[in-house]
Length: 309
Ligand code: ZN
Image (cartoon, rainbow, N blue to C red; front, side, top):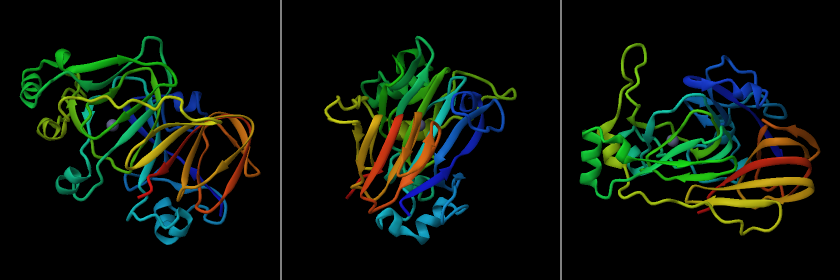
């Protein structure tokens, strides 16, 4: 098996919209659909294989029973998760723990390192990334005394921007933003601030103490790589969990798969890949040991691979 096609699942949330249907053509449950879990083996949203020898199998089962497809990658669970997020409203401002904090405080969960590729956004869009406190004491004072406008760091964004979000980074997407997220397979989020909003007459719970435990002070920006790569694949970022690329296909290219596995998302256009047609919104995994894979067509992709120890 060379390519494993994955069937996405969808999450309805108060801040979600309908662009997963209008932009990506997915059959979504409502026009409050915020998240497409495109490649996930996380218990909070497990994807299944679509077609082929393992049709209908959960990705977690495939991981457990056919680890050879993933280069016998040494992890007790499928380590990555790819999502597309449609924010029709502002998301709460949040922060994630790292592996060691999550292992102790969240029942053995992984921590959450993540990164965002901006697929599209409205004019004058911004995101929240980082904060302006210089010390832990200043951070705590700003949080406990509602000095949010001083604390929160908001930056303008445009289509094609990329952001690496280490554990401990304060972050949030704002209304009118469509992103592709590559992350560790984790669902642990601490809500720091929710703009004072009410849901059914009540504020949603915050996790102030855990947030203060994990927020990195001072904030240090992680820059996307400059366009150092030649060819059709541009490396956006590498960290200890993943490498992420943006790829632009115009014609024919060969992908040399040198990783235990790769996750590929078609974010624009269509292409014939290893003899099969794919289009915008399709997601698949390239299995271990496939060697060269031929891509033909006009399309854009976000690709990721697990870090190799
Ligand atoms: Zn996050």
